[in-house]
Amino acid sequence: MLATQRQHLILQELDAEGTVRVAELAELLRVSEMTVRRDIDALDAEGLLLRVHGGATRPAVFSAVEPGFGAKSAREADAKRAIAAEALTLLRPGMTLLVSGGTTTHELARLLPRDLGLTVATNSLMVASALAPDSEGGTRAAGGIRTVVLGGQRTPSEALVGPVAVHALDSLHAHLCFMGVHGFDPKAGITSPNLLESEVNAAMIAASDKLAVLADATKYGTVALAEIAPLSAVGVLITDERISMSPAGPDAEKLLRQSVGELRLAPLKPPSPSAPDPTTPPPGLPDGQPPSAIAFKGHDA
Image (cartoon, rainbow, N blue to C red; front, side, top):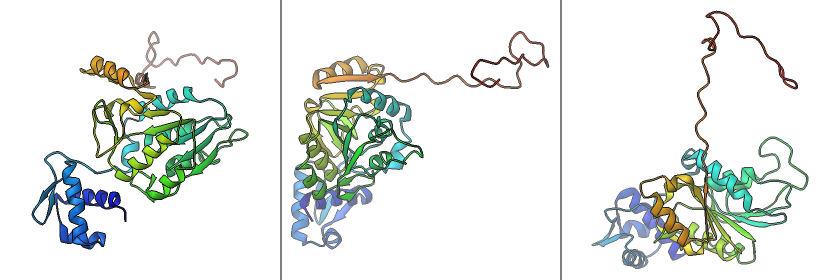
């Protein structure tokens, strides 16, 4: 097991238990106590935990928990749809795309046109499923999307990570990388709570001509465990218009425009008005008198 894998597991245990002991970690990881101590020293030096006698404890504010795909998919659904729709404007016929894991990138995969001759390489099981010919129960346009699935270790967010995925990316090249992130911050850059996933995402960036980050406005200012890249590496950041509507909005928007190649703010649709009560007569009609039926050409009355 690589050091990054061991350290990620140590942080997960720490976040779940609050404290960890060297002897217990050595047994869990099947390594020597000396190896565990070296890992703890390395994590302590990065400020990710606090080394104590016989083990480690977490700092006052720390989280390395990675939410599952189902938990994340229900959040900010309207914003994700708006961001994914805006991302479609970056496409050109014949493009090769790298698409990372994430619920916003999954929404993008659902919307990708099937008639542009696209090739998509992804480490996301959910993205690959959305690109399957019968994933929505209907027929696809001629040609469809050529899909390449990277291998690796499965994460709670249904992404494949680790050395196998990184090695596969060494031989790939893409015109554009669409990436979902846990957080984006002017100082910390784009981040992930999963050390192994951050390594795969960094390899995706290296294998692409341009990086497009898809992240809703609630992720602004969130700093997760592992840095993927600074904001200067982001060619296009697509978020939603709430960035400019928050109390810090004007400053946040200005800072982001200075930090990334291009900032796009996807508009959110206003909530649909509630349907009228069918038992309430329309204005101008006496109670109990039904309205006249009106038929439009091409539609049933």
